[in-house]
Image (cartoon, rainbow, N blue to C red):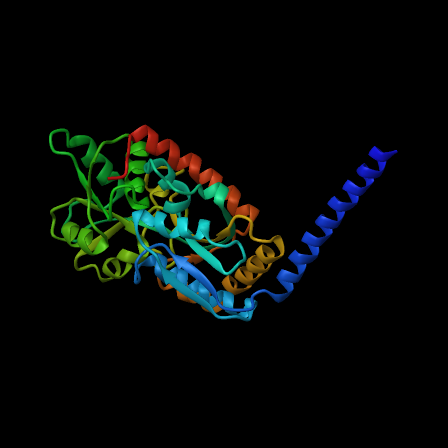
Length: 331
């Protein structure tokens, strides 16, 4: 009899605790957000991540009815900023702008990651996607992907060279993916950002440029220094409608896009997560965002919550396998 009473008392206590947690969570969501929210951008000001971080911060404000600030915390390929987000209080007031690098590539490059992207962060919204682009100097003899592949196969003694903004960057891995798909070997020449890699290709010191489209778009449109060869996405980009895709240029199935997405710390109350998802969904669906992103060769994201998580899992398989096969490490 005593055990039965104790059992009923224990069950009542558990039920009361569960009800209290549920009520507390609902109350939290009802008052959220009571003060400004911060989006941490794990890269320096002025780059693509910073641009998209500020865009999603602005897009969230109408739905949240609160100010959303941006804080840059660069370093270690984005790991420092996203680790900060992963350790932040899980209350919906500190969010992070993850990228293809921080969420699906870095864990295969860095031996001492201080956070697990899948375990420690909750996917909120895919903010934007943008293709990468292959370009050559304006005076280069290579005009098509077929030209590039032929030259790479014929250059036995002196390998064809390609520039990227750095070892382990998504752009570097696009070049490595190109090598694997085309069955060629080229020499990767890393630079510290597009501002250094683009002039080297324009000046003829390096044969090819692999870059995020927004970083090279203005120069490709101008045409005086570099010329576009192909975009890496599955379909042509509206900002350069006459530039073919790599897939239609001889490598069927080739599809690489850089992407940026919003995350919250694991443990953030579910009602708050839902509120953030709905605010992001509404903000990213506005014509103003679509028009703004199109000028940069980017598109608003259309994946949220679990769908974004599934997309990440596929990306990790793709890039993790490539990194291991190529033996790429962070330097």
